[in-house]
Amino acid sequence: MRVGVKMLVATGAAALLLACAPRNRAPEIPPRGVPPPQQPIADRWQIDSSQSLLTVRVHRAGPMASIGHNHVIALRDPAGWIERPDRPAATRLLLRLALASFSVDEPQLRAQAGDEFSAVVPDDARQGTKNNMLGEKLLDVKAYPEILVRSTAVRRAATGYRADLMVDLKGGEYPLRDLPVDVTIDGPLLRASGAVTLRHGDLGLVPFSVMFGALRVADEMQIDYLIVARAPTREPTGYDP
Image (cartoon, rainbow, N blue to C red; front, top):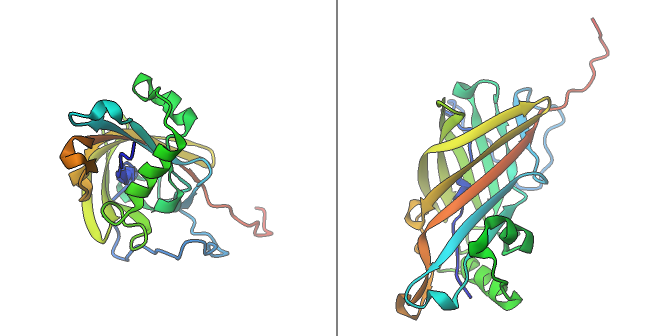
């Protein structure tokens, strides 16, 4: 089925985590693909795109929902950085999500999503869903190829952290508040993960529908995220005290 999801996150990102009150200087947003400077910023951890993943689960709805499919959307290869992960009150996050990189209904991800996603989705339905999502009525990828997620605040919670984010999507800015984040730092690796339920309207989107709403995407979507970041490497100084 061509059930467009559209989430993304926002999703995500949304989900996205570690964020904090921005400093006075505006965040640097280098063009995608530009290599980092030779001298890394000491407290800036680079996102490991190969290990980071956001997934969005959307459900069919409407009187004719039985002829459609639930979908799992995966947003891979996020780019960006996290600053001062050792100090939550000073943490800053910048995450860039290229919409063209997402996939629809990977078999392994559907299997992990549970029984509601056990049905096999034909290739033409998967491609149709992606086309609907990227089209002008939804994400309009030709005009807006990326989603930008940046932090605005982070605070400790009873378990883990809670983060506030700002999502730049289709030329609009959408605040996401009080998102749950679990953070672990193991040597040079930071892992931030969590799950959140959003509505399409939280990101300025309208659920995809056909046949006057008889078949449509449910308003709520579930976003899961794992962001992995690596500590900056430091060149030897030649002086060993």
